[in-house]
Length: 246
Image 1: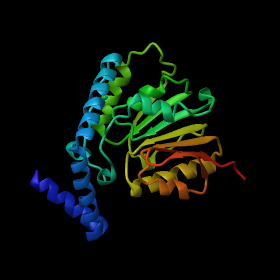
Image 2 (image 1 turned 180 degrees about the vertical axis):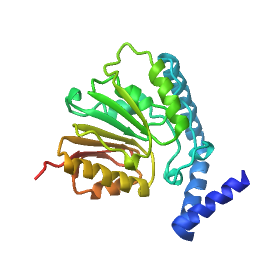
Image 3 (image 1 turned 90 degrees about the vertical axis):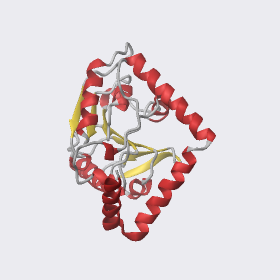
């Protein structure tokens, strides 16, 4: 345990220097202190209960907070990824479900799809197709099982594709797209993903929406020249739309 922690600190120091390492340490300590407040503990217990109820209702296993350093896979982007923590259904509906689009025309792509809960929630909307991109094989395999075992009378899209790979290298289909993020990774990977999505859009101009929940590096999307922000709730969600070509 201590050896893994020291190795992680050394990697962070090499990548971000002394100031960046100290900043991350302070943020982590502060977050852990906040997690011990009565309000946070109550909220955590409520979320865990709702997660279990979701899994029982739909015959799946999507619950559970999973830090990436507990998973055995190797990746050059592992240090830039954030822990798996499933979205709650109400929050998903307030973001993706509120888009004023004809879902049948759009592909839904979740970057950092984890165990697949967002994909299952999206399947209750009539999307043309649903794609999940996840770089952790363990989470990808759980998502595969969840897609197979999902039981929902209200499922409207059953064309669900799961991709185990790097989000920054994924080639988007040249179709109208809803791109979805639930705080999957930090600035270094997000910058590469944005560049990849911009390239796809430039080669195949089309309708495209970006739904970024818990937008910790929202400034990167705000600076992207091919999208414009259409709605924002600070710290909660930002929605962007691709600009008209020309």
